[in-house]
Structure formats: structure tokens, C-alpha cells
Image (tube, rainbow, N blue to C red; front, top):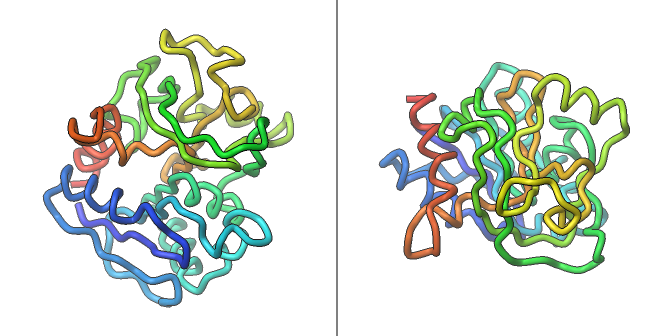
Length: 229
């Protein structure tokens, strides 16, 4: 599996996700600067975390109009999988590739800690390394991760199996404490209509090595390699 990682001014998790991808696939991902107009051949495109353009205007709003995003959209339309993590998720919503928006956390503060996620749909290339209902522990680091959408969009996401992960308690229950940022229906990650685009706020790339404190994120990358090789 060959991946391409897009870098925007202010990206800061590209090294983390490149290390996770290499650990799973054995191959170095291609690094693509946002001002490029072309992408190399790739089986997977990744928009990493960070603070693209300093999060000015709205998180991801300026990055969504970077030149490379035209090619990202074109590749996605042809079925090339796209993974957006944290700021990458914000970019995907601003680019219209995923529904909804990411608002300020309900505490109006930046949160950086481990949280628990429940896998809602394991029948996708992104989640096939997990079991439906499985609870994993993954770090978050964001100030604007409060996912919101209107009721019709939320009902559609749930009804069509497009909710990827939800914030939960360690035992998998949906609780107010578990939903630390106030996201609608505890949603932590969603798929597009074809389930070939995933946006998620937590950082699975940061739990792919025991030295980093856990390996619960490895299932996502191993599953991608298995599905795309």
C-alpha cells in the first residue's frame, strides 16, 4: 500500500502518521505540499492533524481551498480512500467531502488526553481491523472537535451506517462524561456515502507503538494495509 500525506502550513502530526503508515505497510509515504497541483499514484490519501493556516477564519476553512485539494477531491471521486485526522477531519468538512462541522468543545478549552471510542461499523476498509462494538483507547488533542449537523443529516449518518466511532465510557456506554467535547450523538468519526472517506477527531497514529503508551490505533492502519494491498 502506497500512501500520500498532504502537508499544510501549520500541520504538525505528519511525522506521526507517516511513522504509523510505515509501521503497518513497510513503505515510506509520499509527502505532498499543499500548493502542489498533482498527487503521485497512491492507494490512500491522508490529511494529518495540526493547525492548518493557524486555524484562522475557521479550522480547516483555508486549507480546504489549497490547490492540492482539487486533486484530493478528484481522486476521492474515483474511489481513492481519504483519511482525515483531527485537523484533517475539519478540512474534509470545510471542503464538502463530509457533512457537518466541527465547533468549539463544549468546555471552550483545548483537550489533550486519552479517550475511549466505540467502533460502530467494522465493515469498511478503515475499520476492518476492529470488531463492531469494540472499545479502544485513543488520544485526542483539539479545541474544536464538537461535531454538529442537523437532525436529518445525523439520522442519515446513523441510518446508513456512516458513523465510524463514538466517544464512550471505558465499558462502551454512551455517557455525558465520555462525550467530553459535546459532539452530537457522541460522534467521533464519520464516513462519506461510499465509506471511502473517513474523518475522525482522535489520533489513532499516536497509539501504534507500545513505547507510545498503547497500540489500539494499530488496527486502523493494519486494516487499511490488508484491504488495500
